[in-house]
Length: 630
Image (cartoon, rainbow, N blue to C red; front, side):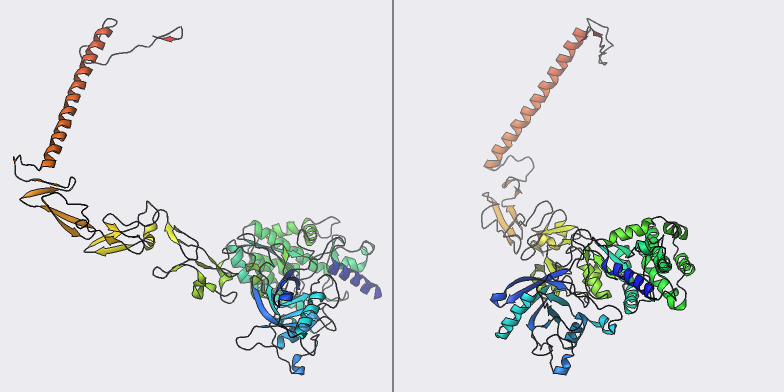
């Protein structure tokens, strides 16, 4: 029995430690002290692997260090302490000391005491570590999934400085900032879920499958619409070479010790073996691979949830046959999946599982995956509670601002800052247009695009429609008015800006006033003219039975055959006649010259070749000799 336990311990050690040449990365966020001045600055803190970090957001609060129960290992109700903020007051960040109990218990007691967040001060000068949940079997973990406040580990030096200022009566204000805790480079989020098909590992396995069931709907919507790219992964490890031929290693591994998993019940004498778990993990990876090749990768979520319901270990249904029934019910090619799985008894590498082991090793800013379950979002490990809302917040924080899908902008995930004072952005209430665009992280002031018309401006104080068809949207923001059945506008699709139409003057935006051409003497000024102003124009008439010519602003006689002209128009008429006569003479001259030249050319050509009678086309023969055209 001692040998069995020794092998089990060795395998568990490999699971927890991962690759000997890898690294574990502590995920961090920013902690900004805003007061007092002596502590002002930005400090690093490590995100706890429990609770609900506010990915994409910030939380402002004031720090309290309790006079008793300073390690938070007991309920604060026993000390008659409450940290719930009063109406109008800042939330309370409870500062506790490290030691004597689990990090999670400190957070649970702080949450029950009314704190909005917990800061744990390290008890030694060392690099920051990740505060994790306790190992299974070490604690009654029922409360773990109920921790909802964010938590962070701070350095000993910062903790000591905060305590000193608090003892001096100073107020410590802190801003916890998770806006840059995850990269958000573009409009698509890539994320991985490192999981396990084992359902006999206690509360962690139970919370894992509950998460898959709860998150399935959101995950499939995001995947189907191309917002995310999801990849499931499974941790395996190899059997130590000295134990490859042992009965225990053979029962926990496939492919001759290359890929192993711990015994589900941690008892080699009963129930399912580790190799059963490895084979089912491999089947789930292959299911995703084949479903992805058919253009439906989101079916993985259906398979995992259906398998957990239909094929549980407790009912002795955790079998290949049960799994294949589930696969067939989902319409995925079973033959391709079995080809992907290959021969698990062969003494060869399995390509799929070897890739899984390679992927477990950290690359770039991402550390090794050593904790199950683990989410990796945009190549950064997620820290916090495995909960639908918390994980969805983290994924939404991975989108480039303004590209988030609608699911990220619901009221249960974020506050719409455009609802209050329009976010301080430009708006046109009359047309219900605004430059305020709600985002997961807050809001941006960006001039809108409406019905294909782009508005230009700073987004805060000014936005103006531009381009073709701009007048169709709120008349391009220009002046427009109808009167007496006539409409005038200061907007034209062919030019930018607003300009009052002919007959009006003004800025073209707020107003255009009618020009009184009669009063300003800009029209209808001939001696016989009578001027009357109209809206946007004027009317001009002539006395003595004369007719008004608007083009020349003059009056002429309306009698047939009369030679009475106003003086200015008589001169103009003479000029027009002169031009007409000259033009006619030129045309006659040009016609006669052309006839003369035609007759001369025909006479010359007749000397070389016979011509058809009168007016036919002249044939032209082109013969090339010695490089010359003749």
